[in-house]
Image 1 (cartoon, one colour):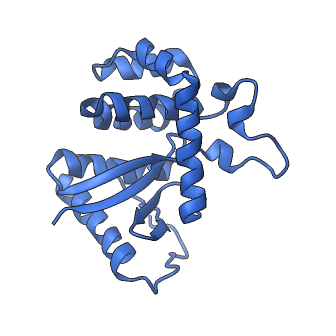
Image 2 (cartoon, helix red, strand yellow):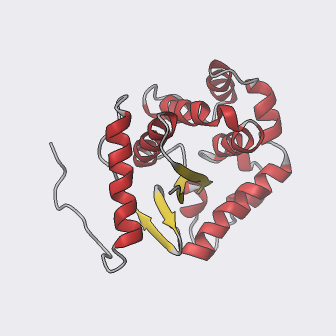
Length: 202
């Protein structure tokens, strides 16, 4: 039976990169999952109390990660057949290349390299309606599930922040097993609230 769940993402976060890469690798190999990739803005999440939300600032797209998230939404919704490739590439630009994903030229190159019209995607990403959608999806995660970071897995009424320490590195079977284990805990072990290793694996 198809497993349905959501996963939050922000291209700024290396742990979001790990979890999303696992899911992309598994989906490309045929995993029977219905995944909703949901944006959560770390820039907005870190706004101090009393300061203006990033959405209403004079230059919201100058804030860390906002234009990349908006571009991801445009591809997800308007060219879904290219989304997984674009999603992986946007994470890679930030974390493998160390590129500045606030730079429109960087984003345009990354999107073009996966077969999209990069400049056209960015033009659409700057549409106020897309920024509004980004705000609404971010706020819905906060209000409905008390999301406070990435990556958060959401299945049914349960939302769980999870850090995976490895990357799939082309091993789709490993990626699938890893995500299935996470989902088994999220869906099947509701009394487990916190499980955190005290040191980092070497």
